[in-house]
Length: 289
Image 1: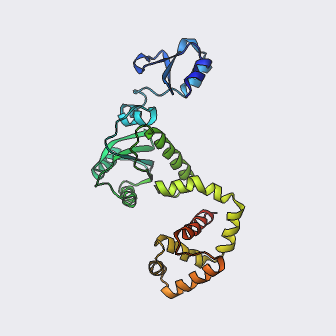
Image 2: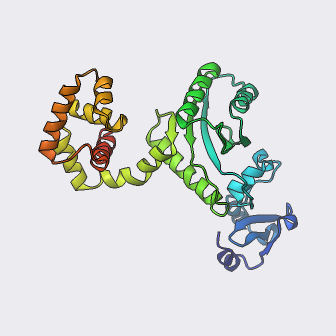
Image 3: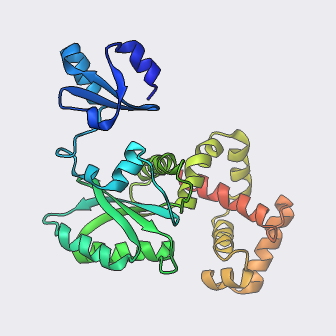
């Protein structure tokens, strides 16, 4: 928040260190540090409004006792010796939730956790340091799938990118939070959210959907469901025709014949990964409609 604007709105306030904050003040994080405003100088409406922006005290918000909470949510400085990634978990419980046992299982599985904490009753954060023992993203999703079965839960998991720049760490995490929130709302039945897949969807999908040219090309190129299935399998197999044919239970020559017909009609070259990605993007965006 802009400290100058706050000062113009509340001239009795001032910048100060956290040690100067007391229960008699509102402490608002700004670009220049904490801005303190004495409650006695405020009306009841002003106090109610500022309460929306003031961070909770540690006694009201146990997560604030975690150093990584203060790093990510309050921009507290951090010295990184190794890159970290943030795994976000949205949790839905059914009846009795054995939370301590569940958290213990997570700590046993992830060997490089720097910190874990809940930021709400249904949202948990894992801070994982980079190491040779990190699980691949797909294995992480599989682990939480197994935990859901064991503990009768429904979790949606977002695995962020590894970050090593300390100055932009909090801002990068907050952007990942927005991506997860947006994609989770748009895909309520999806449980696994990788950073790359979610970022592509978050930044590109709406623009593609709104573009008349992209709409037209999708209708012209992908009216045949069988060709859509072939292109999807071809993308998933990184352009390998034999692997795509095996996945579809089709003869390789059949797949080649269909690809040749598609390329002749569109003048695309599906051996070119740019052309194949373009097809994948259109199918991925518009097949959801």
